Image (tube, rainbow, N blue to C red):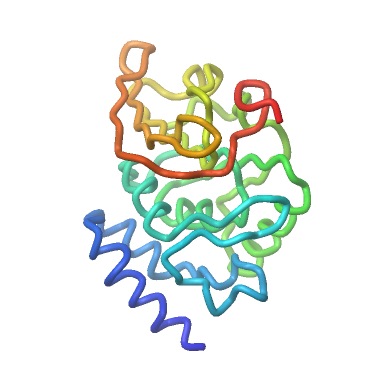
Length: 213
């Protein structure tokens, strides 16, 4: 399997081809090896235009959705970012190339430890993985320039709004268990100004300020 070529084709057809324009995002997705983050049995599908299972009922998001959510954060380089839902670690790895520091929360210890191992193998040093309830955020390192949530929430958790810096952005899927709208909220005078970037489907965001199951 020629992963380099598969990555190039992903960039050409799934990323640029669908309107992603942020050259830094495109560069990050061209240098992070997605095949490292999927399960061994799914390696040949690593660059397919779809999410893939990673165990524990979780998935690695479709490449285009990773690119779109990352682009919505409008990162320039010096930012501190919080990710809710480490999962495979792929989204955090992309963010690590675009921000100064990434904090990422995962509720499943097995996924958190697997992601940490991959980060170490790739020499990524600006990601800190925390095991816990992501709906509560991570107050000790706040406020954040950007917050990215990789699971579908019934509403935007209030602790995340509070931990977002003034002028900062939160990107989060909000809706029911089966489909959501990708919302981008910009914090202005303590409140979110929200834009809808279209429909999406994510696994449920489980926690105190999310779904209870």
